[in-house]
Image (tube, rainbow over all chains, first blue to last red; front, side, top):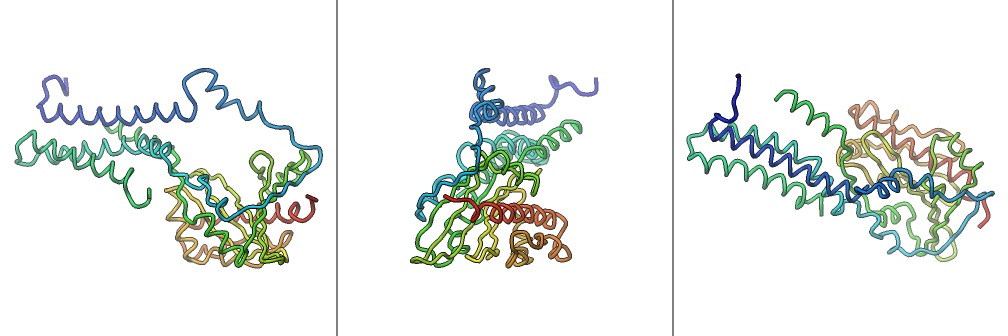
Length: 143
Length: 185
């Protein structure tokens, strides 16, 4: 056998565990995202993917116009705030797998340093996780 | 491991990144309808025939078959109208605001939204003077040529994005020319 994880060094087990945990986290967010945009029941899935075609209003026989006054505040309605919680969840789902790989790679580097084992692995992983979460949830662009 | 890295890379590339607001709509309105102190929304509900005509002209159907124009007035004088047009690209949607003078020529164009991925390409194209190329265009006249105008000064992705903005301007011109003044309220 080329590689036996059961007998691998504790540091390798830690790295694999962290990688799997990160990927698992991303798919927890993925599941939440699916629940938000589509849902898990046949009715909600049908409504999501077949609804618009079935519920589309018939176009008028002749083109019609309706006018109504607007204020500047109407232009600033929440419709423009497209980076909301739902999209943050999506963003987290999209990016966390990549951060997991980055964390694993950095973890390999940190594991080679002459630091106490647990501290080195914990610090390396926490730094990457903190950077990832800061960039996605707290960076200037989000505000 | 190599396979895993490739799979995750492909999965990441296939995801469309979130949309960010480049210019807030009220700011775009200030730029494209300067001096306006009152606004009116003009919803044009297209008949099937008109929707087909528009689609044949610019390969586009507005959402729910409704065109939205926003007119601005200063006192009793019109200062023009504007449209927000969405263009769906393989990299996600962008939104282009196109403003018209009361005489019906393009006053200006503002890219209001783009995905996180496309944002740097949009900014590069705009910095190269993309939107200057649209001023003065008229419905039924010359086709928008912003991408060609900046192609020699920007990278390929910015030029590609400029082509998508061209599409948005072409759609706005077609919609405005056919339906803004020619349908009674």
